[in-house]
Image 1 (cartoon, rainbow, N blue to C red):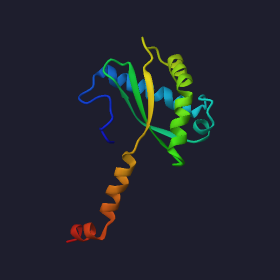
Image 2: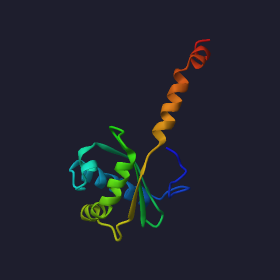
Image 3: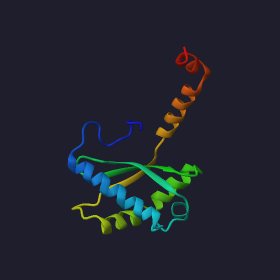
Image 4: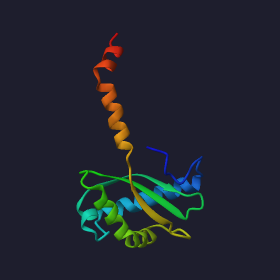
Length: 131
């Protein structure tokens, strides 16, 4: 996962980790049940790969990968249109003093993984391994 746009630059507290897992669980349930009322989000399987929470717990960034890799902009637009509803659903599921402001971003770390796999599959690496 690329670390370039994360809210946390250093170590994170136990509280942040706990809130990250609560948010991840809540958003996965909302998406699985089709509660966003957005056709793109409700009709396509989406994996939330990571949730990043700011140290003050006021902002949360969700990284996602759609399973069928259609147009990423459609998913981002769908998340932005359903953001208010998703926050409300999160507030119904978890008890926090403040429900964080949420944002959704495509997780491009899959591209890095594919690049590494291509390198390992290359003939040059294969020759080096089998010397």
